[in-house]
Image: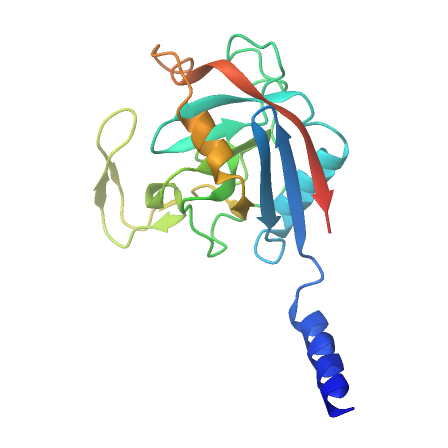
Length: 214
């Protein structure tokens, strides 16, 4: 009797401590399945947007178009059959309409998923773009500078003035299964042309669909 009571108490406590918002996203690709736990407590707008687009089928038939070994794998922005990066699903000036959440305490660490942005301006998000961190990438986190700091950039070293902040990329989930799939994509053959075509996957992996599970 006492044992059964304890089991019931533990079960009740579990329902209280496990967030009701917990969801997983199952990304079914042509190389296998990637399972991601979404963190709607720390990135509610980002998760809400991702879930809505997944349920609307907007990721169905998209590709993992960019792979940089030891850095990131990008997806969600191009349809199957796209050969050039200027042919994105959305116009280049399209922006996602959700809040800036890069300063939510989640870090761009290996195995996390983050929202792609179009520029360094806060809230300037790509409508559907996302990427997986293939290593710890602290340079992609939200940062604030209490003093002038020299920083590397694609255009060469630049100075972030005192008081400046870099919004970074919003992490909104982490991989719990399927890192081996991402590692295969990471090692894909890519182009070596200059941006924007550099690191374009020659034979892109297809994201068949994204299934949201509570």
